[in-house]
Image (cartoon, rainbow, N blue to C red; front, side):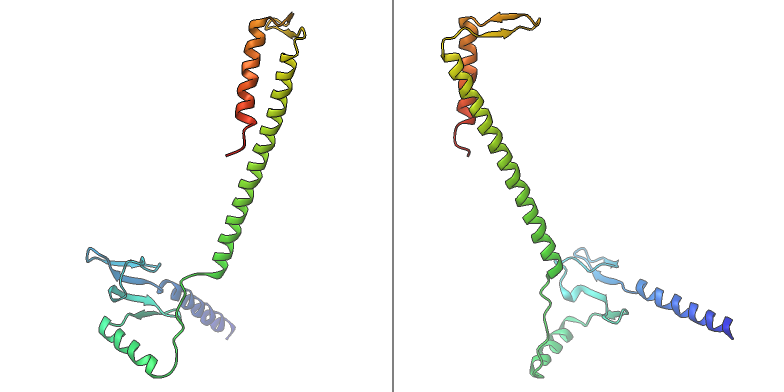
Length: 175
């Protein structure tokens, strides 16, 4: 008796599992070919071209012909009941999308603030360097060999021009 009950339960489970496979869509595409899918057709397929669609109970329902569908829709409002229309949006999905957009905007804002801070620091360093170069003091530097040398007028002019270009680019208001 127990083995029979187990077999019957297993058989019922297998039948229930197979119902998911029967949830198939069938429609005629723009080229006139029949398309079979487990996903709904694209939005550009008119409802009259949908041949089969899964019903709410899990089975497959046949789509009514266009004239019959229009007739049944015409009768529904006359019965006094309003049929809820699907909005086409998923509130949870919309919420996740809004959160993702907010996170992306926050990342962009943080990046812009980081760049603005770096520009401000570069501007301050360049102004300090230009003030030092324009002071007229004798400035020492280390050359490529690691030897200490003093800055001549040509090097001072080159460094002043470099500081000016940094000031022009980083001290200007951000666009």
